[in-house]
Every structure is written in C-alpha cells, then in structure tokens.
Image (cartoon, rainbow, N blue to C red; front, side, top):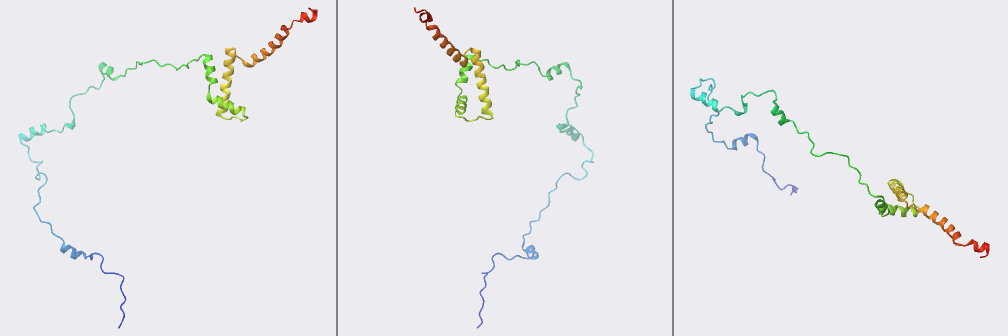
Length: 183
C-alpha cells in the first residue's frame, strides 16, 4: 500500500474568483424606468416672448448687475471732511526725563545694593571679575565715589585729616611753656 503525503492546506480559504462572464450573468439588473426630462424644451429661447414673460423678465432681473444711478467722479468738500482723518493729537508726546533722585537717597541705594555687596565679597576673596560683573562693579563704585565727594563725605580724606589733627591736637594739648620755662 502506498503512502499518501498530508497536505499543509486545509482547503479553500475564501470564495472562488468567478470569471467576468459568470459575474455579469449573476448580477441583478436595475429596473428600467422612463427618464425624467431635464430642462426646457428645445428651441424655447428662440420662440417669441409673450407680454407676460416680458414684464416678469424685468421683475426677476438679477440684482447683482448693480444700480444705474450716476456716480460723481469728483469728491465734494463735504465728502473730503468725512474722508480726511483728524490729525490733531490727543496728547502731546515728550521724551521721558529720568527721575532725579537726591544724592543722599542714591547713595543709600548703592550701599544697600545686594548684587554690589556680592561682587565686593568676591573681590575681597581675591576673585577677578569679568564681563558684565566688572562693568557693573566699576560703574557703581565710580558713582559711589562721585556721590561721596558731592556730599562731602569723602572717607579717605577724612581719615587722613583726622590723623593729622590728632597729632596736632596732641601737641596743642601739651603745655610747652611749663616744660620750657619750668612753670
């Protein structure tokens, strides 16, 4: 007895594709009806119009064709006034003036500036400032020095003057006459 090899396919997966001739025969036929007439009878535009159609033709005129009233091509004085924009300004423009702060207040603001305080700490620690930090530090310290001289609070000159006055004051306090004359 001969052995039969098993096939891997189990059968047809889908419907069999029919040839075009078979498909045409099986297709349902639409019910044939009489076609409805579309449009007007032939030659209707060439036929003579009656009185009724002539009157209705004017009434049903397309409104998009516009008005036949004449339009003036020259602008009148009254229309010029309406069309011209009013050029009167509502407010006067002026350049903004910086608000002047009293020197004493400005000096206090600079001394209380946190960013400047941080930069001063960094300078005292030996760090070198660069870029925007250096510009900010230089501008604020220069303005601080200007304000001190403006207000007469120059610290360095006051310290040197106090030291000189202290030495002279000491000399003046000692009564040299007593030492020299023995009094």
